[in-house]
Length: 388
Image (cartoon, rainbow, N blue to C red; front, side, top):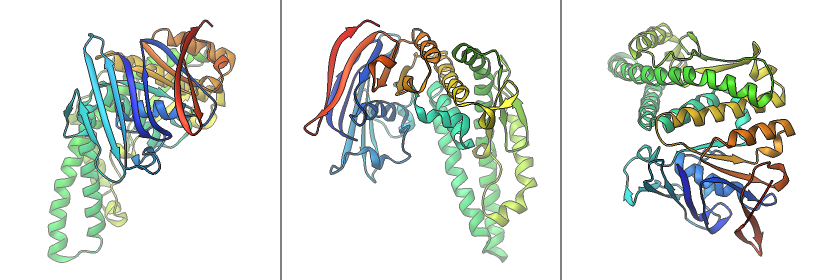
């Protein structure tokens, strides 16, 4: 798959911009604060349903305006033309169209345009909190199987309702408490059923990712140390990524979740929060037997984060269109060896969109677009391809 155009209106710093794209490499070059990242953020927000920089859409709407619009056009691997239009308004529901038709749920737009993004913030997948690693797996799974996004949304909805009821139970007694307990059991059964499905998908993702991440890391970092991924469930079960292990049966996973929830029932009621479920899982990453989160050097952390994203491209491409790869200000953070390794990896991708402040930092031949702001207006100016 490759993007053929991206157009934005009132998105971040851009009042309006339209850029034609083609397969291969497109390099967006410009000084800092010129709007390069804003353009690729628009691509990611439309394709995945979320920004890679902020949790709320409010910051995406240009100051002084009410709504931002992103329009993507793409050609998939079968040659079919696809369109994805997203209207983002502060404080109101996002409107999304797929091939000109309105859709009811944002999850229905997942997978129309597949994108794998790598940016400096992604080092937090390795060094940061478990939430970032869970989100990494969920993003991968939603791109691979869009139906997963709907399941995860249903799980989050049930989790919110269950947490609300647990908080309310702390102030109840008598018949009201008895009725609430019966309702709680219903929410718990839904939580366990949906949670087992989410957990099974995540375990399958870890199994599939594990050998690819190990291979890419050694190639990018030019080091012999093995990388091991281990899924740490809130039930206490640790599962090491095993090539070819496939998707586990959700049935036994549901039994584990049910037993773990029951074992912490009193603590949940006392604290008013759900303590067991995929929302509390983690993925341990080890390099040479040492925890990457606490022991990896900056270069090792960057190489592992990059390996995770390159592996994501391969895993997503297994079941459909090859995703567009977006590299936002990545090359400037790498040494010369890792830059060259990343450039070599890009040769296997159908389309790569790269942002850089310094053109010489990117050792890839491609179409170049100069990004700059003149007199308060952002401009994107295509330039003739320059050999590297």
